[in-house]
Every structure is written in C-alpha cells, then in structure tokens.
Length: 106
Image (cartoon, rainbow, N blue to C red; front, side):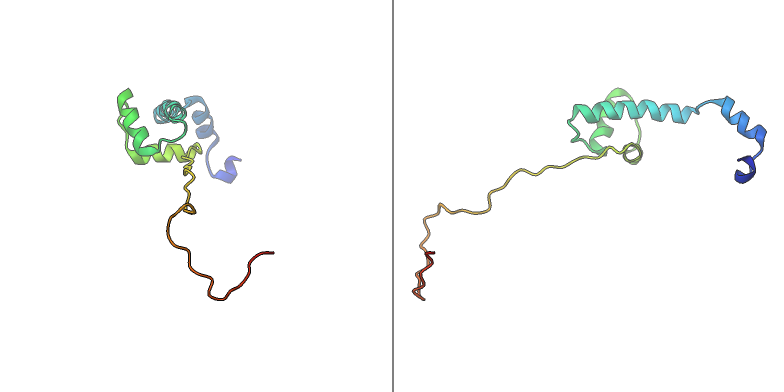
C-alpha cells in the first residue's frame, strides 16, 4: 500500500502514532454543538443561524466553515411550505352567462 501511495513506511507508522490533530478534534467538538443546535431547532436552522448560536457558546467561526461541516455530515434544512388555498369558490362575483346554451349535465 505504501508503494501505491508513494509514501514511506516510517511516515505511515508515525502518522498512526500521532493520533488526531488539534483541528480535527476542534471540528468534532463544533460538530457536536452543531448537531445539538440543529436538533433543538427541529432541523430548521441553517448555517447563519447556527453560527450565531455557536457564538453564544463561545465558538467564533465563519458561516462558510459551519456550512462545510454541516454538508460533510449531511445536515440540511428540510423546508416545508404550508398549504395555501388558491381557489376562491365562495365569491359573490357574477357568473358568466351560458351563451352557447350547452347542457353540462351528464
């Protein structure tokens, strides 16, 4: 595998021993907070609102970073629109006369 990736064995084993990086650990903590905020908002908060909520916890990061973390963990807002009635059948406007004298009774 090391030959295929063109790396040395010692570098691979050093990488295994080093453990997770500071940035990865920080992103995991932020992801935990993002999951908490996202579930608390009933999956309705996007990146801008989550960013402002994270600032309340003391994490000052950009909206783009929040959006990247949300996209990587498949968190996205599912927008639902309310049912809107578009037909007004209870109006008092005059009905057009039947000029052709057609019978629409079946």
